[in-house]
Length: 262
Image (cartoon, rainbow, N blue to C red; front, side):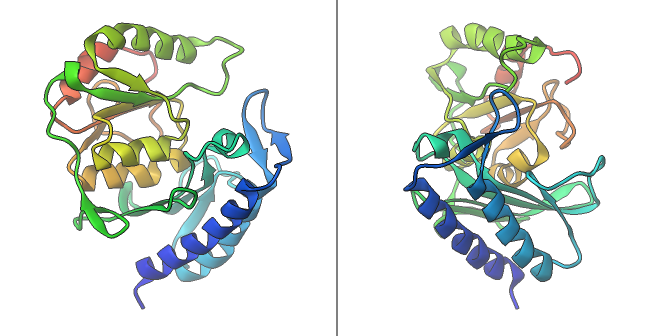
């Protein structure tokens, strides 16, 4: 049995739950003042865990809505049932199921699926990245001035902490030096759009492992580069992720500057 093909089938089936919820008036709960969760986040995660835990019984599942551990397992499947819940609630179609499989600190398989736009991004280690079965690649753009950069805002805006100010300050610094900035509201989609060549770079602060575990492999298998804010290899515990087509990576890092604790 090809487990990866079976995993794709499971995720597509879970996408039907999201499609139903997308058409309905959704009841909202709050994890915090600005971080939302719906019954569909929980329902999709429960469905995925029930199916994937049997298919990948040798891995431990780390789900956004259910994980209570303090350290990440060596063999982990990171699940974000709806990356872009705020978009989901407001009927903005930039959202996705994100599933990333990691072994010993390295991503080996990844799926990001947007059932609303019918976009299925997949990647396996050393096998390339694909959108609906067609191979995708990052751009060859090597000038920052010609680049579109994606980013996002941390959820805790009302406290106006250093993370919030980092994003605002970097946007202010970057805008005159790039073509434009995009803020789509789903890190998994941002990374996939980078892999597909729709944007040239991406950075964000305070991302969780389930936000990026799948997108990281999709970017690197499409020819892109992932790092921390200082250019070192990215670990899921890092506070800031920087991604690019590789050709503008150092330019992007130079213009982002430093961040304490990154």
